[in-house]
Image 1: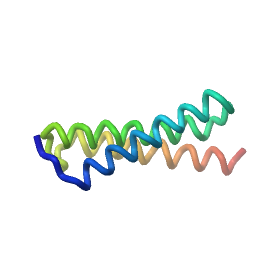
Image 2 (image 1 turned 90 degrees about the horizontal axis):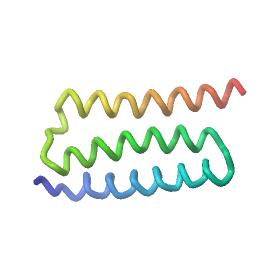
Image 3 (image 1 turned 180 degrees about the horizontal axis):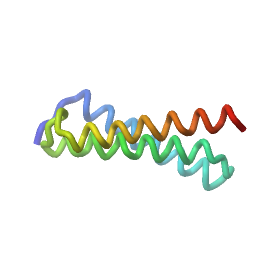
Length: 82
């Protein structure tokens, strides 16, 4: 198991953002918070996979991260068009 401190820090912060995002959505029904939570949830999964030994250049990690970024892009564009 690779314990890179940068990946560990990113995992912890993305997990916190995921939890807070879903909490804000549950309490305030702010849809943007849900999209942010989903996006950072994907980042959390990718960081966890790296901590468990998957290479950061693995195709599955890159796809998960790309999906995270696409969810964020979609959410921001959706918010601007509202």
